[in-house]
Amino acid sequence: MKTLLPTSTAGSLPKPSWLAQPETLWSPWKLRDEELDEGRQDALRLSLDDQRQAGIDIVSDGEQTRQHFVTTFIEQLSGVDFEKRQTVRIRNRYDASVPTVVGVVDRPKSVFVEDAKFLRRQTDQPIKWALPGPMTMIDTLYDDHYKSREKLAWEFARLLNEEARELEAAGVDIIQFDEPAFNVFFDEVNDWGVATLERAAEGLKCETAVHICYGYGIKANTDWKKTLGSQWRQYEKAFPRLQTSNIDIISLECQNSRVPMDLIELIRGKKVMVGAIDVATDTIETPEEVADTLRKALQFVDADKLYPSTNCGMAPLSRDVARGKLKALSAGAGIIRKELSA
Image 1 (cartoon, rainbow, N blue to C red):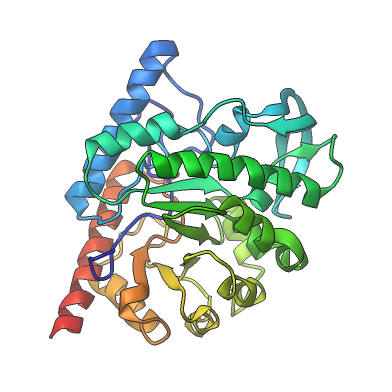
Image 2 (tube, rainbow, N blue to C red):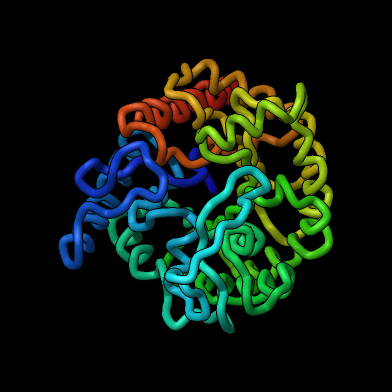
């Protein structure tokens, strides 16, 4: 990116209240059929406009056309039965009713490509598109077919790669894979998790990113974080392997976080998407608070490799709060740009 410290969001933005219940994950759609298709496109346009008005440099769809960052992709795959549900432990933190893998998984058609083409027609700005990562996908399902987390992850990596290549052809500049599971299953991350992630990104010429965070600001996640002690060193387990991977950008949580900033040193040479906005609170950061987080990060990453972002998606927040946080992110990055050019 030509812009110094290009800003972006890590994931979702709140949906309009006429499309889905505000401040709620997995909220059902309020519209149906053609009205739903039109409504989702309208919401995408509004989300883009919010990002533009806030001064965000790398824009996204705000995940306006999907109910959830993982399950919307899975819904379009064959071999997964959404009627046959099982309760599983998600991220070793909370129980959820999930669909079951009952046969060979495949991708009969593209999932997000038409949405990406629509977004590309709306803007000349760089676009980042998020996909679920293979390990996080398998952690959001019950597998009654492969009976192997690794085998299923490799299958999902293949399907994600097909989707990613089509998204790149549709004009997407950065493809991000969301892997919050990397902060939990450390042995698997190093044994095969990063390798399946690399398979998902295989052959892409656009930039690639992996987003690893501590989750949305929901109770199950905030309660879990209270058990992690005075320092959150989970990144220490995955970063050395990611540093040698073919992924271009590593996205991590920093704002109001107990993650030691010096862990960024473990991925020296990579571009780093630094979370400078806390998504687990309605309190809107000041630009100076954002700038302070970025200054600390600059001790461990070169300015031309620093991408200011949010800790995670903001779907559970109100639209007003999310807008305020986007403006603070942009203004905080602006403060550091001035300091660097002085």
